[in-house]
Length: 275
Image (tube, rainbow, N blue to C red; front, side, top):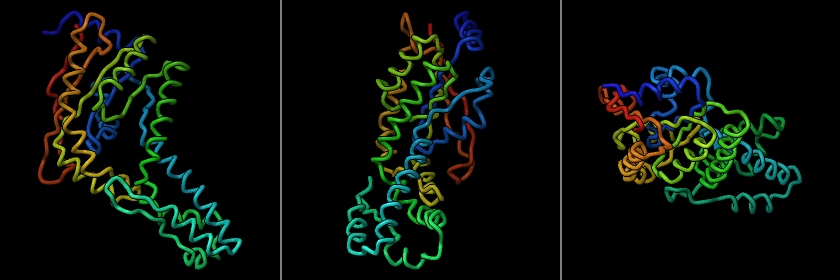
């Protein structure tokens, strides 16, 4: 039976700006859900801004590559081979999977591509070293900071509808977001996309082989997976409060179709409203 509160929340959804948090493991398909499914359940969102730290990650990867390339190019241009190799070696790092990552374009590569102009050479440099920059997790920390700033700007300067694409495994962080938007007269919702972590790990392996090379690794996915049920229970408990900062929650479960990790459909398991 549909409650009066549910009817009221649905009615207000077309009046108030909204924050919708997409909750799910890395590689669960949150971005695809936004593009293909969101309007079925939030038809009133004719326009919205997606806040996703992955977008900032890609931009920062590119800018970091530009900076590194500029340093190496300058040393090569000045024929400082010893210094070039010294700097190149200093750029090595150990990624989250304990794999040593290094820039693949050495002195000989620069020498063999002398005939290319600066921008063309950088384009090839970035293409060859994409996995180096995509696995550099310090970049992700900076990206989260930029994502935070974008989030604040969208709330306080424009009142946009916001779709926040995140794992949401840490309720304190997400509830802080909800408190911020609630003070600005937003309605706050969560869409939880529940999926077998092993499917996400398989999808993540495909991501690593893509041109973006943006996999996060099985360890991170499994670690998040241990926190999802507890986090979801915390969000649901917010619906019971006298002055809730969460107004509604949709819970979807992935139903696979065959052996492919990407074939299947999202099935709505539950829809919950604040009291």
